[in-house]
Image (tube, rainbow, N blue to C red; front, side, top):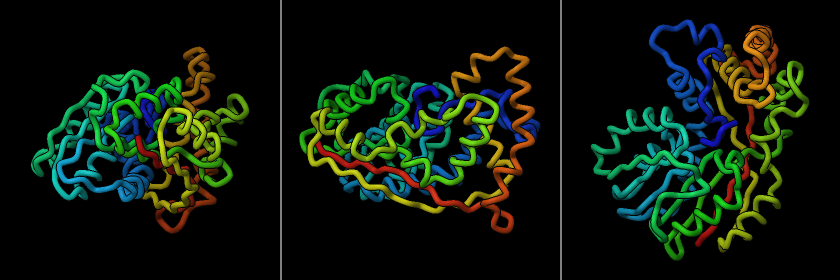
Length: 291
């Protein structure tokens, strides 16, 4: 999965569920925003922002910002507008984030968008009061280097708040996805999203980067998703489309895998259906630290 955060890699149009891809005027990124961000990443963004320390007129970096849900959530809850930078490796995600940010500008926020790798941040030392990163750290090419960069750009006493997925066993919806994807590709194909599920490993990485007052919590959160089949198809096919094992296949074999994935959607939905929606528990490791 390319570095851009969470399951935040762009999903190729050919990998979208047919029910979504067939909709006119909906791009892969729009489908991602509609189904994944709204139902899954939105609730977790509220949890992440609630762990920040409000600073009037603060300087914030939304690292691996994707379509900007963390920044939008922060902007709605901050005491006083400040300076918010969104950074991601995906120009498409950044364009979507900017298009959704009008409300923040109306509130008085100064916004910047940067296309860059997290391992080489294009900012001066001590540029930010707080850095937020939702479901991005585990996807960076070198998480240790990225954390050292975070430490560099934070002002003295500045704060990092980040989340990564916790143990796969604590994420039953993704446990089923892992089983279904492994049926068609390699075993353990979803290892990357859960690469920092060990709380001690995460704590050690942060401490070794020079960050102080490091704390890690395993946090559960129940989420609810409308349009069950479309949400499940986005998660299942999106998880498959960004895997190296999938990319290595020929176009014909990739299409075959995706067609077979259509048959797996109901198997994914069934255990979690609650009326007209899906409901399932999720688990994330939340990291806080100071520069």
